[in-house]
Image (cartoon, rainbow, N blue to C red):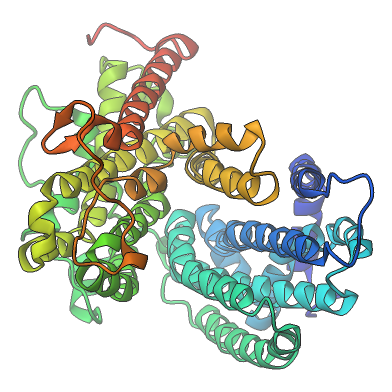
Length: 560
C-alpha cells in the first residue's frame, strides 16, 4: 500500500521520470557540475600530492557546496506543488475519496517528488570520485557528505509538502517553503564550512546528530500532513470559494490584515462597493481588488511574520551595532524580494490562460500597454510593499544612530538599489508569465533567470578568484558584478570613522577628481552602473512583452 502497490507513487513516478524535461534537467545538472570540476582542475602537468591536498579539499568543498545549493533550491519546486497541484486540477476531493489512507498518499507524494532529485544527486558521484586521486579528502568524508546532503534534501522536501497541504495555490506554497528552507540551508552551509578542518567532528554530526534531527522533523511533519488530509478544512466547492477573510482574521494567530486601514490597504485594498470611474484601467482595478486575495491572507501573514522574525538578528548586528556593515541587511532585504517578487507576477498572464479568459481579454478594446501595465503594477505593488516592511528598520537606524547622519546619500542609494531590484524581479516574472502556459513553470523560470542574473556573477567571481586569480577571466567576472544588486550594495561608499579596522570597508580617497555631494564620482561607479543596467533591462523587457502582445497574438490597437 505504501510502496509497491501505491497508485499515487506509481503514477507520479511515471509522469515525472518519463517526461523529456527530466532527462534535459539531468543533462544540464551534470553538465554544470562537470564544468565546475573541469575549470577548477589543477593545471600543472605534474602534481605533488604532498603539497596539493589543500587545493583538492577546496575543490571538493566547492563541489558539494554548489550541489547542495542547487538541491536546496530545487527541492521546493519538486514538492511544493504535490498537493496544491491536485487542488488546482480539481482532483483533490477525488483523491481523498479514494480507498488510500492519508499516510499512503503523503508517502507516495513525497517519495515521487524527491526521487528525481535524489537521482540527480546520486548521478554526480562519478564526477566527485574523479577528484579522490588528487588526495586531501577520503572516501568516507565523501560518503558522509552525500548522506548529509540527502538527509537535508529529504527534510526540505517534507517541509515543502507540509506547506503544500496548507495552501490552495502552488505559488503560495512555494514562497513559504523557500522562506522556511533558506535559513536552514544557510545554517547547514555555515556549519559545514566552519568545520572544514575537523573531519571527525563532521562525520559525527552527519552520521549521528543530523539523522536524529531529520527523523524527528520529518516524522512530525508527516503526521501533521496526514492528519490534515484525514480531516481537510479546505474542501467544499472544491476548496475555492469558501474563504471568508473576516472570519479568517478573527481566528488568526499573530498578524491580522485589516484591508480598511493603513498600511494594509496599500497591498490589500478593500473590495469595491461602487462602480469604476471612467478612464480607469479595468485590468489593474480587477487585479488589485480580487485576484490575489481570493484565497485568503494566510500566505501574506506567514510571509510577513517569518521574514520579520528572521530579520531581527541581522538588523540588530548590521544596522545598529556595526553600521558600516549595513549592506548585509540590505542584502537580506534584496534576497527577500527575490523570493516573493515572482510570486505575485509570474501568474499574471498564465492565470488568464489557465482560466481560459486570455482570448476574451485580448479581444477587448484595452490596449496591450494597459494590459501589461495593469498586470505589472498589481504584482509590483504587493511585492514592493512587503519588501518595504523590512526597510523601516533602516529608517529607525538613521534616526537613532549618528553614523547615518553623515551617510544620508549612501542610505538613499540603498533605497534606490532595493527599488530597482523590486521592479526588475517583477518585470522578469511578468515576461516569463507571458511566455509560458502554466503559472508553476513561469515561476520556476523566473527564479532561474533571477538566480543567473543576480547570483551568477557573484559565484563566477568567487570561483575565478579562488582557482585562477591571475587570469583575465577573473577581471571579466569582476566587471560582471555590475549586474548584481548585492555587489552594488556592498560598493556603496559608506564610511564609519568609529568602526574598528576590521569592520571598515571604505575610506574616503583624496579629492583627485570631480566631487558630487562630498563623494568622488568613481566611488559610485558600481552602484550607478547597476542602476543604469537595471533601468535598461527593465525597459528592454517591457518592449519585448509589448511586441509579443501586439504581434504574436495580434492584439487590437483600437483602444490606444
